[in-house]
Length: 250
Image 1 (tube, rainbow, N blue to C red):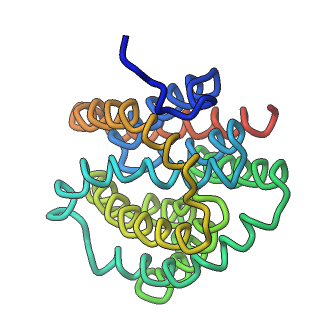
Image 2 (image 1 turned 180 degrees about the horizontal axis):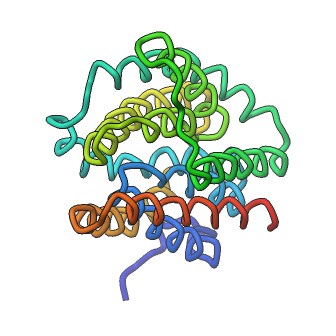
């Protein structure tokens, strides 16, 4: 048998198995829809390991789908819109981390679950934003997204609501979301490093979860061309709703 003595003694346990199953499922959703993995991983990993470990791990594992999915999205994404969200979000990321490190763990974890559940319910209802579009609304959406990203590791809710309410084809929505989340990922990682949240424990857990997450993302990306827009939305929303409810009642 291989010598695993170099691994931290408490790394491989039931928590890691649960986390691996979580990221495998979230990877499928991310590869298929272009979003949703952080919305599943952040609340569930916060439940497993606590928010100050779970949220950074949820951010770091996103490196895998960023590498997998971003090249294919470059030609499809509407980059003017993507940067209109991303730049304001990057500005407010540090503010959100103050909340992450100061709110008690149980309250923070349930707060993350509540944010995800509200988003899922709004999308299930069929509500679509029909207000003004353009640079101003995009900047506001980005500011809210950046605050949420720093606090919860979940940068998506306002941007997802804004983009999925548009009349753009699913492939363009998916590409825009991939581009936005990739930019936020690098900003979020930098902020977590500065705040001292990227610890040895976080790095070991992330390394252990990368393989199931990569596998899930690759399979999900293969499935995307085979699904209709209705299926595309239904699968993603079911996963978000189940994960959020589990975290809230656990």
